[in-house]
Amino acid sequence: MKNIKIISVLLVTCFFMSVLTVQSIAVNGYSTISGVISLPGNDVAPAGGVKVLLSIGTDNNTPDNKNDDKSVTTELTIAKGRNSIAYSIQVPKSQNTKAKYSVYYTVGNGYAPFGWYTKNGTTAIKDNRTLVDLNSGDVSGIDIQLLPGKTISGRIILGDKSTKPLNDLKYT
Image 1 (cartoon, rainbow, N blue to C red):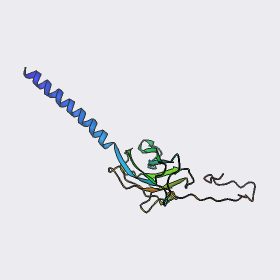
Image 2: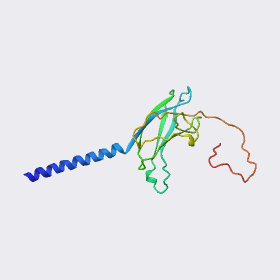
Image 3: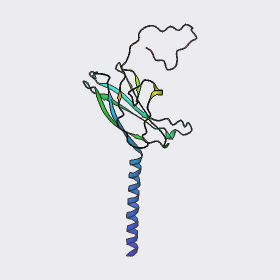
Image 4: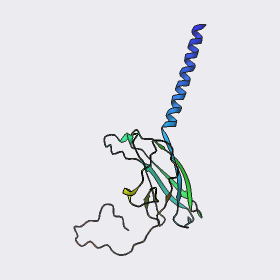
């Protein structure tokens, strides 16, 4: 009888240890990032809304180890007649504890096609972005205001036929 009690206690202990371990991994494997995405000024979304792709990711500059790079992209829609949408997204933590995450958007609808989060407002210049530390826990207040689009019209003239436009130049 004493052996059965010992075995029962061991089984119960093993069960609880395995459950607690799984919960610990689930809790520590992700962080939540939240904020608001808004249209510039007093703009409101037209019929069909404004679809925004929000991307949160890290490139830890470790070409030999892509496992520590994490990325999540979510499509959000600012509904017709609204100026903004709140978001809350779970992002996997990187194996690299020093990793920092970039937050950026892509969009159509006549707004600037992309923008990066900064503490001082949205920027179109990647080098000016503010990196976010999601490995330390949840982060809130990561607000992005879409940048207004600009229309430039005219002709592009390449003086030398051997000259090619830059790879990242987009025009239609």
